[in-house]
Image (cartoon, rainbow, N blue to C red; front, side, top):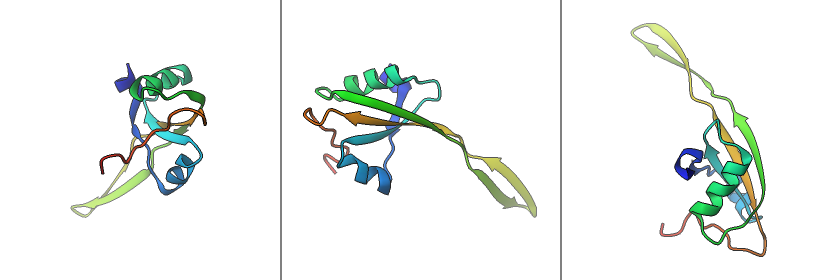
Length: 99
């Protein structure tokens, strides 16, 4: 179940700063619900207790490419982003362990 719901951690400069506050971001499937995301995080990272889950759908971006004198327009795929607040007294997630 957690493989379908959580795709991967979503790491940017902003989300790295939020990790210090106990807020972690994940890319999720578009059909994932908040209870499914909560359960998937707690299963994938044992000992972690989730306080809150916030989601937003990030739209795809337009892309243009010139090929053989013609312009081809397309879009990247959109995705759902989940921001998960962890219990401050509980265990934290270390994405960069072993790097």
